[in-house]
Image (cartoon, rainbow, N blue to C red; front, side, top):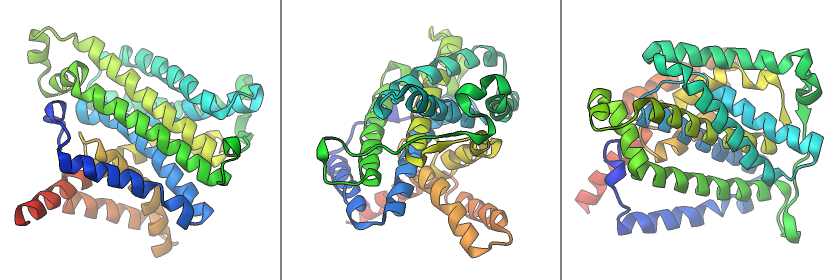
Length: 326
């Protein structure tokens, strides 16, 4: 389902059944997979929340960002600092990370209003390059831990639930992701979502219809950063460690690759892109330890060639053909 028709779309009965079945199936992996595999799936969930936010900005609003790794880092460090220095419960760090990234994204979006296309991409890329260096700056070492980073303790399951820490974090991340995807879907189906798409498709016509382009662009940037910050906090809690070198510029590029491969302007594309980000580099490394990034590049080209509209579009096309035959 593309960006243009999502605001008017409603879930068909068969889709509701499919969603319910998927949610039930998502509860199974923690009980049949190893702890490490469950940890990997938790990261997939965190990345899916990030890509949902980036897709709002790029897929639905048409703004290109190569700096969302910086907002991911802000969310991750917010969670780590609050947990390590102030003993804040892990679940309370998520709204704080969301608020910080919402403000940071909105403020960054204001000066970026004068930039479009490659110029905006370059400005956001500069943010991704600069932030890891700021995290290493001596004046901030007392909070960020400098180059050594911050190690945090993985939270245990509450109320004596019969699951281990990895299983609990998986379910916690899944619940947060369901909340964020529901929020994102409702946002995109409403007036704000229609305005975002209108600004992307024809800004002159959108302005003629009374849409405040500057406000909606800045607001979209802020909301996109908010989703990314929540994903960053989830990632930090799962990994139990943050350090400046974990948030280099390649992370931002990987996020952009994820939404392109997954499918621009689609909610489900965020999930497919997150799976790609988490597992394809590992597969490439297993195929060739001498040149893993060459294999990674070939895989990206294959995905783009086979599914130019993204995996989400390809899956939608296949399912539509299957329904016609049945």
